[in-house]
Length: 148
Image (cartoon, rainbow, N blue to C red; front, side):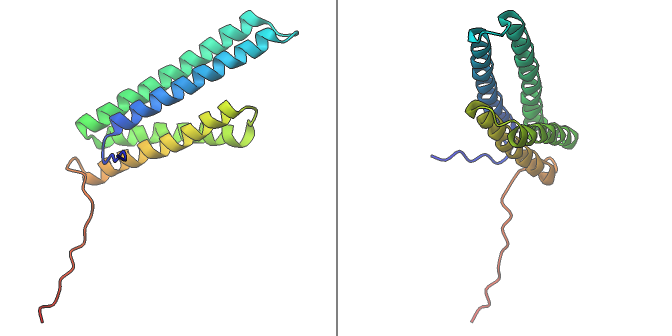
């Protein structure tokens, strides 16, 4: 069964929150372990910086998660526009990380996840804007058939 979401920005933002938070946690733990086991690294400062970075990322994606549910529930044009702008920032960060920082496979996966999920959530929010608070439907063009 394929996941077909028409307007559920809250569900898409939940998927984004869980997947990217989990990938960032794995990246932070592996980076801290690599730094602690190296001969020249300071383990405590690396763990403190990685923890702060992880908390900042988690708070940001938590904000996007709440904005996604607010967009879905209220069907507000302003909240949807704000969500699209915030997801655009996530897209730009993911694109920058993808092009400049190819140090690990996890980092590349995080960048691709940021790019893909930000485009997906933005698309769903844009569909809500086009629906103008109404129901999100496929646009079907009815063709008239000449009676013979």
